[in-house]
Length: 226
Image (cartoon, rainbow, N blue to C red; front, side):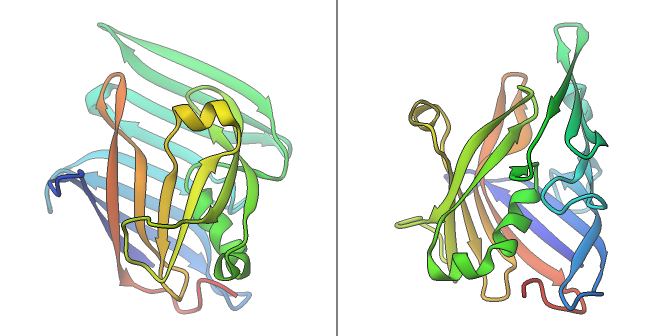
């Protein structure tokens, strides 16, 4: 499975593109990803300025994460030494030096990591179609914490998709500090739109907020949803 994303600012200017290559199997009748490789480019056919590898062997909701954005000397690694524990290593430029922060925390089965939100939507596809809500915990890796979030139908989202959902914090205080993420899906369960904070740095202290539109280049040999 391969697909491409184009990230744009609010004024329509292109920030970067994403090229996704996903290997997986169709053993259960639906596509189960195993490894997802993502290359980030400023222009088509230019060299990648950032890369990410996600591995879904343990869980679709909690992939292992290897991320690099060398222009900011940033790396992020998330892995799972045990079935109920995860470890984070985050390195970032700090002046002329580098600073590494490490976290080790227990997690429950409702914790979602990185692109695991996409599989959370598909795992709850019937709820999405019926306009129901789903509560979960979302990992903030650079803080080494999880926070309560809810996935719910989105009204007046500003994007055109067959199904539109919003992911927002459950807590009142965090709701004032963190903007929701808007997701659009087609009838087959493919992510067509992402609107919100990205994992690509705009500066040392700020990440880009963008509208990413995805195009499916090569579909898997089986369905994405049940």
